[in-house]
Image (cartoon, rainbow, N blue to C red):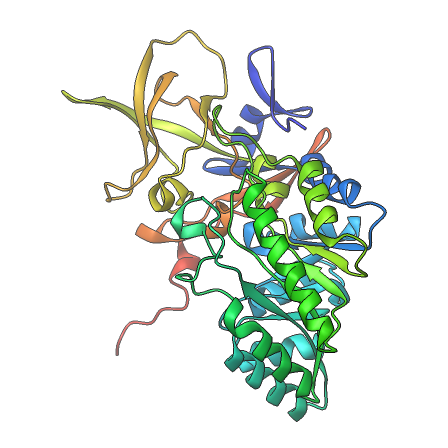
Length: 415
C-alpha cells in the first residue's frame, strides 16, 4: 500500500497531514504508518499460506518497540542479532519460541540469555561458535536448537556493504566446510540440529540469486539426509528489496515464494524467512525543515535540520531516497544538494534534486522506515529524532526526542 499520499497538495499519512505532525512533534521527525507495516507482513503470510512457515522479522531494520509490538500482535517471529535486540523483542511482547538468533559474534552472555529465554533457534555461523554454544548449553543444563548458516558463494548483485553470501564476506560457513560442521553438531549432546540457514544480502530485487542459493540449500539438505542428519526447517533469510527510485522495482513476494516452494518441493521442511526492509522500509518517512538556501558558482544547497546522524544511508551506501516538499506551494524550482548541518562533506541526504522550496519549508525523505533511525547516532552531540506512528486518524509518539543533557549524563569531569 502507499502509506503516504497527497490530498489538496499536502502529504498525508492516512488522515494525518505530515505538516501537522511536524508542528506537533518538531523536526527532524520519523513518521511510520501502522497499516503499511501490517500489509507488508501479510504479503509474506499470504504468499506462504498452505506451507508450514514462520516469518521472523529482522529486528535490525527498525527496532522501535511500537514496530515490534505491531508485528508481535500479528503473530510474527523475530530474527535478532544481539542480546539487546532479544530484550527489545521480549519487552515488545514477542514470543521466545518464535525468535531466531543470527550474527557472527555471539558472546557467551548472549548465548546464555537466548537459552534462558527459550528461543526457537541459534543460527550458528562458524565451527568455533558451535563449540562455544555446546559448552555454554551443557554448563547450563540446556540443549541449544541450532541451524547452520551456510555461505553459498552466491553473488547477490547488490551494494558490496550489504552483500553477505560471498566467500569474501564474514558471514556463514562455506559449502566446503558445512558437512563437516553438521557432522560435528550431530555428535554434540547439548546441540539439537534443526535446520539450515542462508542470507545472501540485502535490497535484492531479482529472483535469480535467490534461486541459485535455494538450489544449493536443498542439495545440502538431501546430502545430509543420506547421512542420517535430518533437518526440519530451511531458513531462506531476508533481503527482499523495495523501490527507492523510479528505475527500481520492489521484489515480487508471490514470485519469490513460488521460487522457494519449487525448490523445497515435497520435502518435509518448514520455511523460515527473515524480512526486514520490505516490511518497514516504505512504511516510514523522515521529515526535515529547510534552515537555509545557499548557492555558489557550482551548486545550490538546501541546508536542512536533519543530518547524516539521522540518516546515514546516503553517506554510507551512496543510497538514493526520494525527497519532496510536504506542501505544494508556489516556489522557484531549482536543483539542490540537500545537506545537513554536520561538519562533514559526507553529510548529505540527497544530491542534485529538483525542488521548488523556500527556507522554513518542510521536506519529506521517503522510504525511511528501515536502516534509518535504527542506525542514527549522536555525532556532533545531536539528539536523536522523535518517532511517531500513525494509526488511522491518530498519531502516537513512540520515541521521544532525546534531550541534549541526557547525551552526556553518564560522562564525568576529572577531579
